[in-house]
Amino acid sequence: ISSQVGVLPRAHGSALFTRGQTQALATCTLGTPSDMQIIDDILGEYKDRFLLHYNFPSFSTGEARAERSTGRREIGHGNLARRALEPLLPSADEFPYTIRIVSDILESNGSSSMASVCGGSLAMFDAGVPLKASCAGIAMGLIKEGDKLAVLTDIIGLEDFMGDMDFKVAGTRQGITAVQMDIKISGVNIETMKVALERAKAARMFILDRMDGTMNSTRGELSQFAPRMETVDIPVDKIGALIGPGGKNIRALQEETGANIEVDDDGRVYISSTNADSVAAAKEMIAGMNAVPEIGKTYKGKVVRIMPRLGAFVSFMPGKEGLVHISQLEHRRVERVEDVCKEGDEFDVKVLEIDSQGRVNLSRKALLPRPEGMPEEPEILPSQRGGGGGGRHDRGGRDRGGRGGGRRY
Image (cartoon, rainbow, N blue to C red):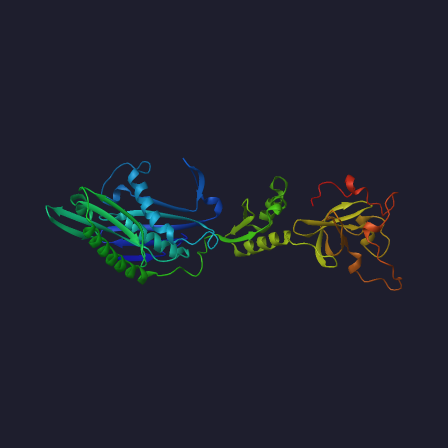
């Protein structure tokens, strides 16, 4: 028995497991929740985050035949290996990745499905998947002639063909995770099963010892080629604001940060990228979208829209805009907003007030030094100014879109 990990440097995780004349090359690929397999069965549709694909090419047994679609045998063996490994996976909260194992059988004269279990376990360790324990498998056999019987351990192809039982047992040091038995006789008594299980346990411990000598725990970090992922929980009523009309906001976030962002209906946001800095930037921006502006606090703002004779709309938090009234741009009288700022300009703003509809009034003037000799004036909030007329203080009817269309609250 021999095993290696990291045999494919570009894969997220890989392992080569060899037992006698049976060899499996297992690769592990990590994906995002959007990569989950959608399964539509008789009980309804659901998604699966763990995939195991088993390939048994003809050259593995020295044959030459046309390679067509996946056969019934490959599907069955893959399902057995998958069931053996699935109980050891971390929860989606602990490790939100989609996990795909591909086991390619390079040679076979024994149980290739159990070799896939061993190789798959090592490949996931190599990929950084925090499995609960190592997993190994063994195939037990039985030959019965009259009242005589012999239990065989780790059967090869000839013993499988000539024997009366193929009993596959997979598990960890703590217990069994999957079994499968095919028999050619009418039945097996309890005593024979006890012997088979005891010998299978001893063989499993032996294989696990060899595997642990190669790798007995997960790597401390993921492959440099694997996506980095973070999760953020937001209130369900904030999902629409994050996505935006027609996906405008979420697309802008993805373009600005370079990260991929996915949102579940329950408010869980998955952020992934091969660049850890992109993930961190996107996470910070999403967290900022749920923050509440504080009156009196200073923020870095960017002018996003100019309203002549009214003021400038400034984006000062992710997904949040406020109005800097023309009277709050500078201490001196300003006739034209464009004389002070234009779209794209950045400057600090102070939150003056938040009205009953959640609209934010900002001030640039409050952060500027008062010119020498200018008398102190009582602060008049924008909402306290009179309407009417066409003067510089006219902000228009707020219920009729006087502050410009397209604003979201």
